[in-house]
Length: 179
Image (cartoon, rainbow, N blue to C red; front, side):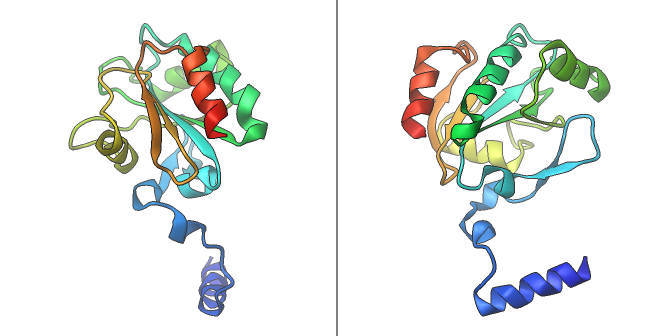
């Protein structure tokens, strides 16, 4: 690890290191743990040069069936430059207390293959840095399954509330325009 860091520092000094972290907004920098996993995801790397659909999720919500539509969007657009990222959250008291059970609902019941992250706060003072920035740029989620379409610069293009289904023409048209 020290060798890698030394090499990156050396390359940066020469101006040859990737500029991704410099171009990545502060609120996207950092690692988040994947749902029911020890593995982490670096948001800057995941979202680099991509259009992103960020969704706050909960495994026991009336909108949980939207996982199926989000997975369909992921499959339809992943090769065109869209990344779908689900942020599990218990801010509205509808996430399973067990990450194992929440993961079962996502992965087994709905076949989710897009990136799902472990529970984190998405509202208020305890919200993670990304959701604080999303709220500042548009609006804070008022319930589960809010959708934020982000451009390649990490800024909100459009916010969609819980009632907007993943297969809605409004969301598809916004994604098409962003790509």
